Amino acid sequence: MPEDRPAPEDRTASAGPAARAVSFRGAVKSYGAVRAVAGMDLEIGRGETVALLGRNGAGKSTAISLLLGLTAPDAGAVELFGGPPERAVRAGLVGAMLQEARAVTRVTVRELVGFVAGRYPDPLPLAEVLELAGITELAGRRVDRLSGGQTQRVRFAVALAGNPSLLVLDEPTAALDVEARRAFWESMRAYARGGRTVLFSTHYLEEADDHADRIVVLDRGRIVADGTGERLRHSAGGALVAFDLAGRGTEGLERLPGVRSVEVRGDRARLRTDDSDATVIALAELGAIRGLEVAPPSLDDAFLALTSGGAEHGTAYEGETV
Amino acid sequence: MWDYLHLEVRRTLRDTGFVIGGIAMPVLMYLLFTNIGDADDGSWRTASMVGMAAYGAVGSALNTGGGVAEDRSLGWLRQLRATPMTSRQVVVGRALTGAVTVLPAICAVLLAGGLVNGVRLAAWQWAATALLLWLASVPFTLLGLGNGYGLTAQTTGVANMVCNLGLAVLGGLWFPVSLFPHWLRSVSAYTPTNRVAQLGVAVADGHAPAAGAVIVLTAWLLAFGSYAVLSYRRNAGNI
Image (cartoon, rainbow over the protein chains, first blue to last red):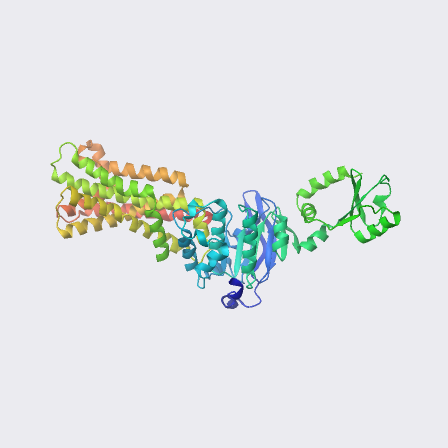
């Protein structure tokens, strides 16, 4: 299995051990009047698993095109392993699962994956690739006769066939059902464990939080946050403290320590707080602890606060505040 | 690159449309056109054999461009750019795919001529005819690649069909040029298809190929080659 197999670091060593796997420095790419990537600075070290999180049109796919050397930046620089992306791709250090790719016609799974593996200097054994992507039993089938989810797994196999040091996955789970999604992430983690670098884009928060060491949030072509899921939650602030009002009023609640906003749903008060400990102690002093519940800040809230959707959400939220 | 050639040849031969349109059709048309009406014209059987083999080769050569357009629309060419393969390997691999996939049509029509229609040629004439038709298909592969890199999948299909039928009819691959009005005959002399047929017929008759045919075909080779290069350069960044 791949975790027993070290990543081919020797092939990247020529770039110098200090060289990052991925480096964006002030990268800009526009399509007409649209700045798809509007000045991006990003460093990804070797062995990291990074999620590129953003809504549709945030610039994720353009960033990935720049990264793979499929598109040249209008300004700034993009490097892989200390050199131009084309050089790393040519050297077989990179495997990619592209978003817009559809099923290759009139070719079997085995032929396709075997062909791509054969382009790389140090590919994984074919059986291992098929196993890892969960398509062993589809090996003899024609790729253009598979279901959407099966095709997606074949594309994953194509990406990792060459045993690349850097695996780039553009929205890898878009067409997968829940079970296939779980299996996919297991395989991805198994692959990443060998010391490889993985960069995947997604617009699912849970995926980014569950499967990446680090989340880079993109909005309108810019990086608006970069850190662990935990850090993102806290940067947006606001744990939730909820309790039953049991008939008492809400006056004064917004002046309790840490509280930023107060919302009432039915008989329950929901306090958004920067300091849940202080808020809970103050509530206890008031005796307002029936059905007390403390929830950590949600990543959804953090995401909305960080990206352009945050403004709309904030307005709606204010409206509900009592 | 040989692996790529192997893969693409297999994909082409699995294409039912290619097998029917590019191989079976020229054979059927040849047998039909030479066996209806006055069926005893031996020279027409030979000339039509060369014409239909050329027609099949032109169709197969253009089909290479259809494959390129299809692979662009599927994102397969883009996926290849994310592998260690160079763009040059991909383009050359495609051109060689065209060179291989024209062979079935040429061989099938020549076989139908020899086995069904009783065309009798010396061994070297069979070989030389096949070889000349094969070499003369190169400009059409380049025309197809130009279409495939320059146009969308749908328009490539239409453009290839128009080129194929237009050049075949105008070049006299379907009907003898002698049936054309005089002005059309002079136009026909400048088409690459007419000159391909001329080469083949000359060899089948035991003559050396005319210099005019070689000159006209070379001109088309350069023209279609430039078209392929230009259309590749213009669109390579978007693949």
